[in-house]
Image 1 (cartoon, one colour):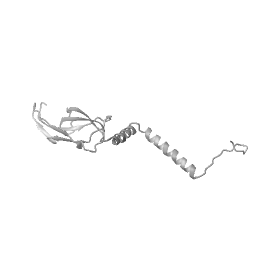
Image 2: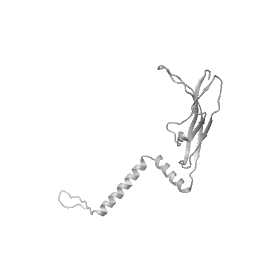
Image 3: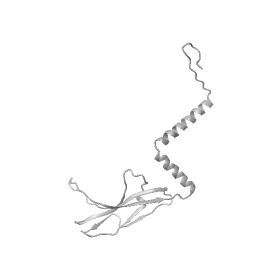
Image 4: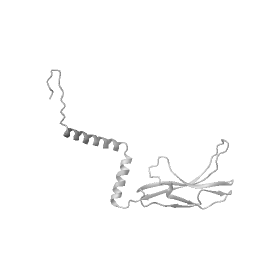
Length: 150
């Protein structure tokens, strides 16, 4: 920048991104928090991504961002700039069964609310079938003449 300021590095995401958002706890920055820079000065920031063993398999996306931390004073509006790098990475399932489980889970989420409607319809059908077997229910309609319609 052209004036001295405090800066920070962090992780940001798109609001409705299709990829998974890696938790912020997976990232560590050195230096942590804010750091001070004079005009024209630069600083290397080390970023580490620590993926836990039980991480959910899938495609992940995040922005690694550096930005000034100047706050607006007295109701004034400030416009800040930031620089970001896109980070895409994949986490593979640990085994075949875990791969199937997470693939089914991602399909379930992708087709909401239809998956819930289909499951509700299936449960309702099974429930009605069980009730009909347990209780012998017969329903018939009678016409105006009082005879049963077949």
